[in-house]
Image (cartoon, rainbow, N blue to C red; front, side):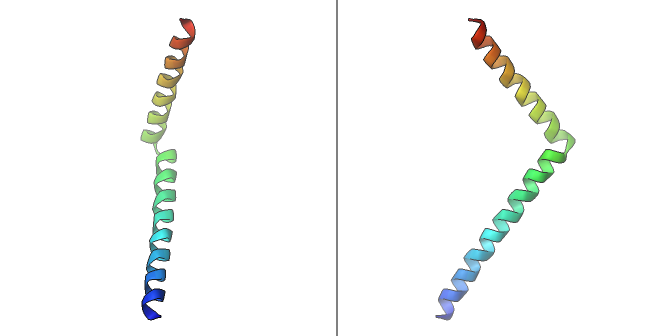
Length: 56
């Protein structure tokens, strides 16, 4: 019984760690200057790609 509780606590701990890291990385990228520049460049290239298709 102790082994099951121990494994369950380990899994819950890993899940919480995953959530914390995911939120921290997304928040960090969204608020950094580099992240903003990458998103702007990505959106521009994406818009240009769709505009090229529409011209044909």
